[in-house]
Image (cartoon, rainbow, N blue to C red; front, side, top):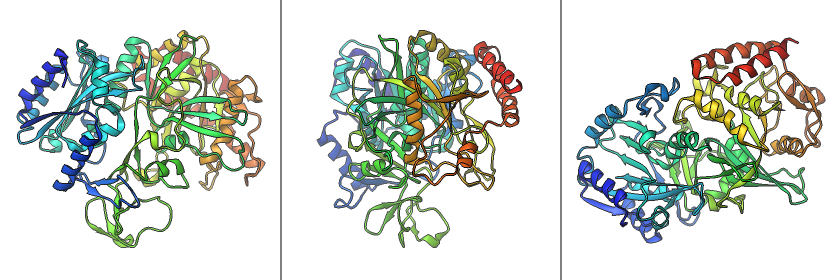
Length: 582
């Protein structure tokens, strides 16, 4: 409990609306976790896995209609529609509160209402933020305990007289998709989510507070809330260089954050600070510093293996909640893309008997694991440093078969913002049924920016003006292909070879040649790789005609922002057009 009058008043108001049978204030203790786990096991909403092979691990299955973020039901609720911008769904605060209040009304009758005080960011960091989530879901409580710092530590940080906390209200209600809404009220520092128990919709500290609400306050207060991994690369001398990177989905962001150096890169180590979200601020030294606001990983299971991400696999061997994966006959877990042969049989994510001949996936494509970050073998000793880590380089990336070279350095901070604003990936047949459809996802923030993205781009440019020593900005593309569609670059751990050139450029050396789009490496170390010089040349090729076509597509995307789009990025667009024509 707390004596904070603002928090007490809000909890009372929610209780009056939802009418729970009981109210439980979460304290974050181990005893609380054990009790909540036992309750979920007894009601059958959690299943215990093999405790010899996966100690402390449990399985959860969600309803088939509640397996992912529902972007079409996610709204930014600002007084003025233009403040949400053309890329967000908008609803007026009055209409949203009224509509959702009707769904929340008496929705917790017969249930327990949990009050979860939590911290996003390291304890005692000046850059962390306090939230309080109210929910009627045990599953949400158990996940929030992994993803955030929960309980007394958050109440102590909030204090007895502060009103500065994000009000996060979540309820399952009747789990009807027609009664599902995820509404953000940035002007009120509030999130209301109802009708879903899926993590991205229900763990309101993650995308909701950390990105949508966080980006709004970052714009107001002079910092950045970004969909970025943070990693440290340690060279053989012991020097560590910190890099942040934004990538659209299916572009290997988590794999990069947890990269294991190959044998050929002797003496190098990679340290994970965060795999998904970065809060970036200007330090007293004029550099950009970053904290990871999360305490855990909420990762996509399919495709994760000891080949693609051995550190992630090691992390999730204990104290992990698996969601919508296949359960094997020996009570362990499996998903598509895991190492080795598929099991002969099991129980699929829907709870049905499964074999490889079933014709359906054993795990849902968006199946998840929730695991404590501190269990990761590559976790950085600085990941909970209250001041964060200094960022020397920012990477933007995408999946483009023929456009972007393997890596290039942008000409300036504004040119780097332009590279981030034009980030894109091409869809694959497996994902969409159509090959090569370009999807724009600036800074990987299109679904997560809590205000007008035109103003968001302006904020990036303004941040550059405040930085005395800004990070160098690069674009990478691990997915360049030859004419047969085969990837030219081996990727995974070998990406460290590219990062070495990035670091060299940050240190003021590293040979480069100028191209119309930026500085290309004169040489990437490919010792011991089975690559021909022709393949390396193709990886770094800039096709002017392809880029001219790209410019027209970029212009069409930018035009939707009208007068809100910053003139500086139009200038970068024109400069690139001139360089391609010269």
